[in-house]
Image (cartoon, rainbow, N blue to C red):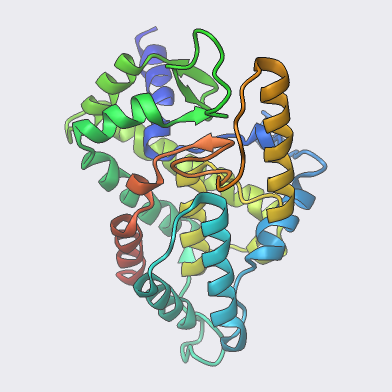
Length: 301
């Protein structure tokens, strides 16, 4: 029972570190039996219309700049995060080293799946360990909400954790978030294992849906986009037009069900003020976190 309680508690807290969910709001479902690798029939189509069409992986020096810029716009319209020119330049440089014509080694430098798990886990754990009390308080009361505008009675002040599909009160959330900052916290080893498992899960999803993700090694571009996906709880499915239509459907539903006026204009689907799900991207995918991630990738080359 004690072990079960610890794991249940960690499942709740995990959303602080990676904020990743099953993305039910965009109608993507994964079979609960992971051994069967059975996915919803529309998963591939949803991913292909999103990242597959709007932010495909660079394949040569001739399309590198265009596709990095596509990724910049993709992240910005979906979450509001604006990549700096310094980040774009560093990512481009790291990615270029893996492309044909630039790599002079027998096999161009790419990351194994284990290395992807290592760098992303270390980046999120570093961000988690540096949380301030004020940041934790803000997350407890102003972030981590599914459809933030949909204020159901008795649930508006709960932290809504989509990964675990549980909710929890803000005071309990704050206590646990502050505890895990400590390097001696019992939750930290569980956190590292769980983040690595989620990286595996998301890579499997992307490999199933997009041919340019169906591989055994990964480029810096792919690692960067995966980190964005985990931090934002955005599986990167659906196009700009499709996400806008989904937000409009929810706006109408919120008004019909609750009489609440929640305009979609100027809102992103994800990110700090996400319409579908709000997550603290300014903590877990800010300039410092992005730079930390790129440093860890660079150190492997």
